Image (cartoon, rainbow, N blue to C red; front, side, top):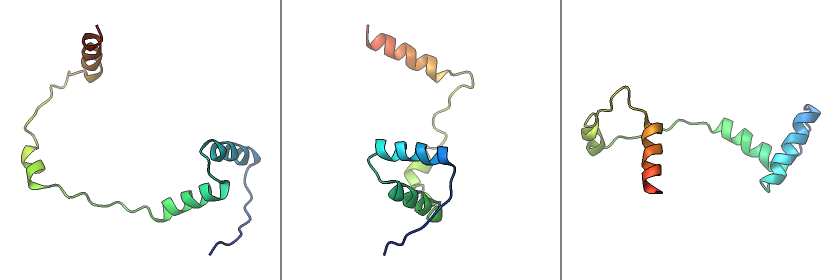
Length: 81
């Protein structure tokens, strides 16, 4: 059941929120409802690590000086020659 709620917020925030809601094709009410629900339902679920994944842990070691951005850049340059 929906119920009406009156809020007092900064005018600038309201205007930015309206623009955001419009850009994402959602009503401002639904946007606020979704946000409130997300903080209420903020449950951190424990992720179960399977024995296979656990057995693979530590198999690969990466050097501390490894620069993944540089490596990826080189990969892309080679790929798109």
